[in-house]
Image (cartoon, rainbow over all chains, first blue to last red; front, side):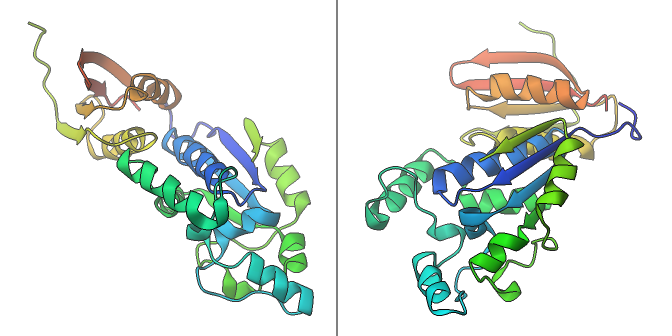
Length: 162
Length: 80
């Protein structure tokens, strides 16, 4: 394959902040990057959890602060979409995945970053959830809007909404 | 007895699960020259589908897959 041949591309909206769905998103992102594809991930709403640092408070207004409390923590605090059971489900899932030698969610995110996937925060969600710049991981790209994602998606070979 | 294949690098990827074996293959094949062969041993049955698909996407060539019980050996020629 010639080096100058245009790379295939995957664009993804990551809407969910659930442990299992984020696993799916990052596993596909890593696989696409390994398969020599360009990968764009657009994080919105609950998906922001995947771009947040672990111990940073978010929220400015009264309600924003309450939301920040409910949504506190980074990627390691993600709960599964089923059997969350107030955090017990997360521990069970992590244990089961570790026993099967499945890479952890934060490892998968690091792998995706190292392999060149681009992680974009959504401006609107960032404003609504009152997430300051300093709450985002250093590897996050500049904040963008839906127009940016649409343009990226239109020039992609496949797109996903997770 | 299958024919012996000259390999440039060998990876032990046993015990690792999707998508890590494929990722390791994709990262390490870049370290050998074109035309040379990478040997990779996995235990994840999913890799039997994943690594050939990866080869197709990236334009590399699977020379042979030896399947034993819970151990799969891939010989992959770097052609891209």
